[in-house]
Length: 334
Image 1 (cartoon, one colour):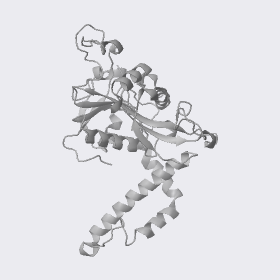
Image 2 (cartoon, helix red, strand yellow):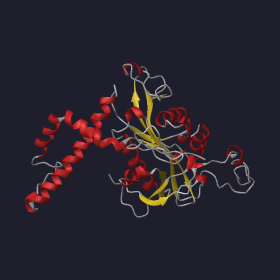
Image 3 (cartoon, one colour):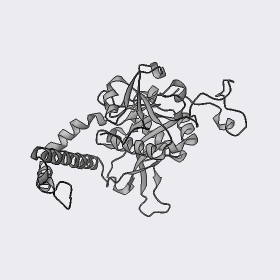
Image 4 (cartoon, one colour):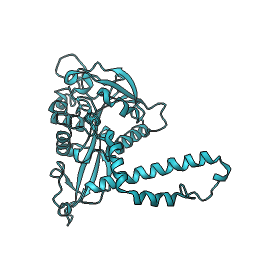
């Protein structure tokens, strides 16, 4: 079976064994989410100390022009309400600005993220990212599982990329740089598209992530081409393992952000983009994942609901079920 999505260490998040990891090197990879966004508050505090001038400028620009509205009707509203709205708007802009500055401080080249579906051609980069994000080998999604998922349901998988010109990296490197593909064939500057974060998922007929959902049928390469139902190699008829095309639950198995880039908002970026994409495409009724107890609050920030202790025994068990209902959601939180 697989591990939960990559989650950070305590204070991070992970997931693949079906646990999400962020900021924590010890994330789960069959459901691992590795983003370290749970450490964003600390990073934002550090950035705040280094950007007082920018914040002062924002304050000045904010006076009398909160969001660039052509008509100022704030005089019709209570002063306390107007002040609150302006404070919220300012905090949002400041957070976005700090995250961009934080990421750019870590990269020697311009940060201009590209979010797109993954394909099997991204296999080597996904494996490299997974291995870097999860210190515990038992929490990593295996190469075979990546091949299965990127072949069977690539439309359910997503990556965040950034264009880099090798000659401009100034000695900076990342595990996915050697596996990056050229942006264009024959481009003179040799620019490549580097994977920074990914989400890998399958569909299930169950409401929560199970051991069967984290596993995969060993004979899928041949069974998919004949008229007999895939039995996963156990002779039991239609396979109960892995991706279920008729399922309406989207199970996140791996959410990983490279350790060098955790805690600066990339995890939040890919999670929100993924949730919005799934909702707009109507491919599922809910999104489910398993995580460790200390990550429950993190996922609640995105609108996930805590279901309870998980029955999944992957990597020793101890997981917790989280689910996001797409049928009644109006958007992602955070």
